[in-house]
View 1 (cartoon, rainbow, N blue to C red):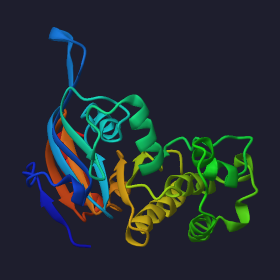
View 2: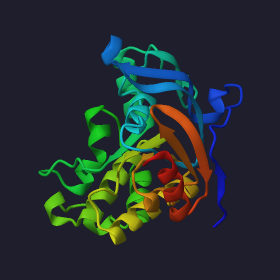
View 3: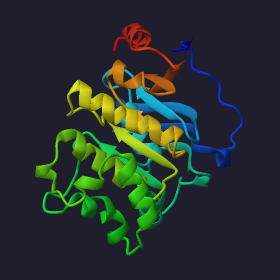
Length: 258
């Protein structure tokens, strides 16, 4: 594996949001006011290329989860601009943001977030059903086959292993062919072997299906599956790693105090 390390924050090129899955320019976010204010994000400018797997890492309190929530339109920003797939989301109404997330963003969480009374098939198609849309059956079958779920579609979550439940969550995220899939510690509740399986599936979704993945993780082993690792500290972008190893990622985190 080739490892390229840049321990300083790179300067992004001039904004061309239409060519990227995600773009951020000058994004800042604070909680509270005055002396008690917490500066969660400080002037973040980043681009996330299409069909790439990016991990976001940093010490506790570095702002990685806040950055993901803002990029996904789940939280507002104080200053700056954000784009998803060429659409600027800064200033969109709640209704417009909800529609955009439903159609163009997928999520895979640490907790599988499956409805226990529904089958795997019903859980996968639930977002489309709730939106009143029509499921593309051919695409659904292709996803289920690629994730090894064809013989599990009638099973309910309690009848599935943890890895199978997370596969269902990945299938649900892929169903609408989103511009980007966000992973929030997606292997946090899995053993190492099952976690590696899920991470391989996410990487395949980039390389074989053209999806863009942005994952927040604290695990250097998980981050090593990514094409790129973005490093944050105290709400600021402080560096990047390209196609790195767990050892190199851990070393970079130690230097940051992670």
